[in-house]
Image 1 (cartoon, rainbow, N blue to C red):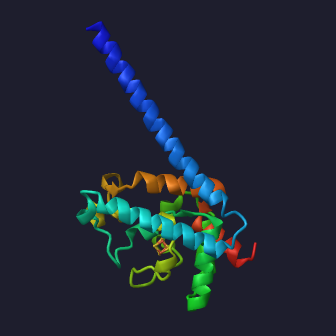
Image 2: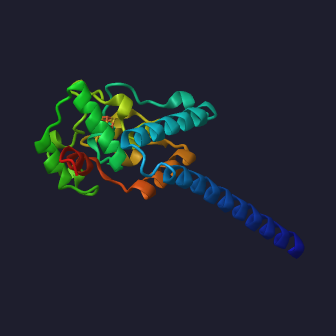
Image 3: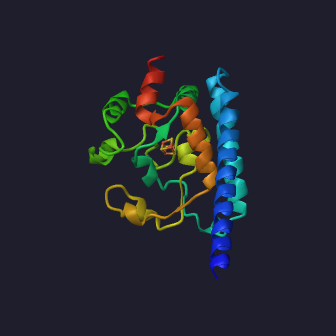
Length: 207
Ligand code: SF4
């Protein structure tokens, strides 16, 4: 019995080590991929990272039993009223896209939002919580160029639960691609992340 227990423990440890090594290898691969992009055109970097994430999500969703249960739909914009962390290349793409499409950005709201943190975001007046790129119809006005934080936020629970004012955020259920999460961690580590309004304001100011 003692030998069986020791063998089971050794097998468990070996499995854990293999898992850790695999996760490290995935992180290293994405870190190297983003490092190779350092110095490249910011818009091209953002577009490449967005395309890579989309492909990964598509691959993992195709293999997931939750594929048909994702409830996110155009016009359901609850998640666009929460704090969103992006990286500077994504801010550059958002501003470029808005300028090219003639989409106005409210600088006053950005300034007020920029004074918030993730923890204080929901204490703002309701009119200030919405993303600067959210349209009056509840649709994203820069959808094709939306940040990876928005692309990987996929919900399987009742959309009303996501409402920042009247929902029950603790009951929201998300579908995750763990590899997509790791890809985003690698991008944020490499490029530096901050709340969207701060980086968009910096980009508008040409910093
Ligand atoms: S960029 Fe678009 S999808 Fe992302 S929070 Fe803003 S409005 Fe929503």
